Image (cartoon, rainbow over all chains, first blue to last red; front, side, top):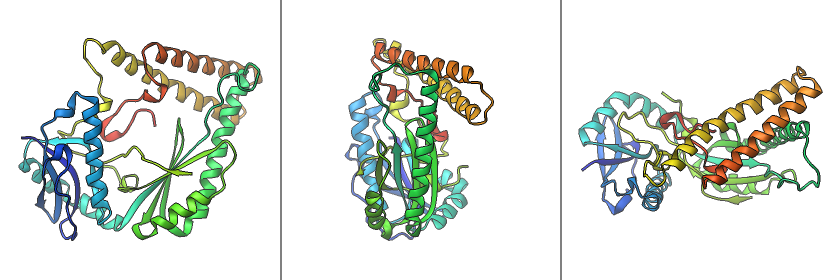
Length: 217
Length: 109
């Protein structure tokens, strides 16, 4: 049966692995090159069923969160499916250096995320037809406000973060902070207390695996 | 502020890794039209966003006259409205417009 890959971690990480994962399949470990890859058999029932896919994605995330509470990890995209253990071992052989270096560099760091956004006014809320120039100026002002808020947030949280990255997206500004696991409560508390401009929303989430701080290969 | 779930990105260099289920085009005969509309509208939305960014950059750089700013803004606004109308027509939410590009991430982000 095909195998669903969850994540890679160091093989010396003394952790308790959840008994079951997606589709209630037992989680197994494939070890090689000083690394561990967590997998479970995957019947692929959720490939065409949206509800089943969501249930499986949530179960997948629960496994990652369980591990992340205990050790650093590199997650796979869901669903990453492999034919056999041999294929996983081959992958570990090919990319062991990259994974080891990434796990060493990230250490006990986890990723926190702050999404900053300015919800759009419903059309006609201002009581007049918007001109083309107004439209562009509003977009420009929103981007500036978000960028400034992101900067202030970064400054305010600087004592707690190891690294910071941000991305301008259509839905707003996504800010990612690399934070030591022990600093997560402090980060959440400080981020939630922060004053933000009116009409701006901020959504704090985490901890997540530190994928934004990995170098892509 | 609230703590909530977040879409999670991840890393994979595996040749056999599959894309996210939600990112696939549904080729079911009953929904193929919606699947294709999603693909096309996602690409148009990408272009609209690129044009908007470029327009703002040019506006900030002072290379556009007031008339050009008005025309560009109007065009982008109309395009955005049309995309929303087409989303409604095909039973899509604007937030659903996206394509999973595998290890490269999402198209619209």
